[in-house]
Amino acid sequence: MARISRLLIGCHGGGAGHATRSISIARRVRDVSPNTEILFTCSGAGVQFIRMNGFQCVEVPQPAARMLDRAMGGDYPYRKIPLDTAGYFTRTLRLIGSFRPDLVISDMEFATTVISKILGIPNFLISHLVERYFYPEVGILNYPKMVGLRLLYRCSERIFVPDVLGLPIPDDLADKSVRIGYLACRTERSREPPNGVKQKILFVPSEMSKAVADQILVELCRIPGARVVSRHRPLAKPVNVELVDPVPELSGYIAEADIIVCSGYTTVMEAVAARRPCVLVPGNFEQSLIGSLGEARGVLEVARIRDLRFKVQRLLNDPETRSRMVASQSSVNDGAQEVARHVISMQPQRRKELICGCPAHFVENGFLSS
Image (cartoon, rainbow, N blue to C red; front, side, top):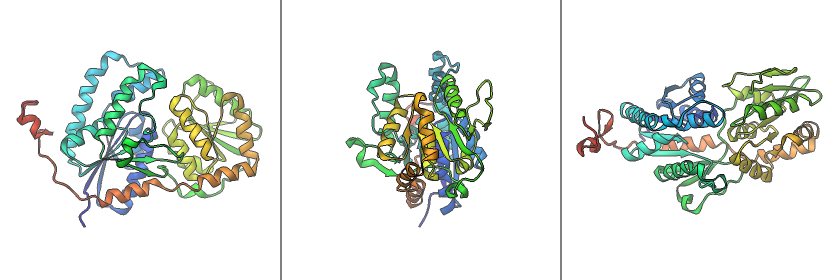
């Protein structure tokens, strides 16, 4: 049976979380189909993480990722969005035209999904945001995101929902959605019991202000007999804290940790994959939703700064509480294997002809000149 020879994976560049999920899929595909050429496109921190893991990655700046940086305190003027968006789509179109993939997988990456749909290239979407793609609670400022997500889902042939929480899937997306388990990078040590004299806490914030992350780190450092490993870098380093690289391979740290304190969904999935107790401190609406669902399923606990120390200490020192959470986590399977099975079952299809990296019918109808 013929298998796809070229796979393009597009990752949203807001942090390394989307890249982490996509790397887990790429590893599984490479294991079962070593002759398949895999190429990534991403921006920001995700590019570094992908290359650290031995995969080729073309960096294409993404306006959506830059807007996320702005929300976290970065400097990105709104006036640059139109021109940057045009450049983003143009570069992605040229990349697809030159690489000529048999299949496109997008982890919330907009241009690869839309362009592959236009060109008739099969595409898969990785997304956990299918429960509420309106987010009316956030208000009118979130309208571009609502419209973008709707278009993203409409252009996707199949949506894989990495689910460790019991995510509801809307009726209008049910036919094209496939619920899978966690997507997480794991080391061989991920299922071994932690060792060491002190209890180790791993702190991984995501989409969180520096001020809030500083407060959380201070609270964790007050827990007796614990050592904190932190991806967050405060201005003044507290005592008894080990700082890790902003774009680390976290799987080794997770394997050695007694508990994970985080805010992002990818880190939750990594904790579940390693069967490590997890405390989520939400920093936005989406993370609050993830926290409420995860707590109901028993795979994590939600904490605010005021009760963070109590909940962390309980999970560190109460074997029964830890065991219940780990038992709930153990019911979740590896979702990357499921995606890889779908990938290798795909039959290569005839692609639409491209002229100078653009769809031929665009040129023929005068939209672009060759």
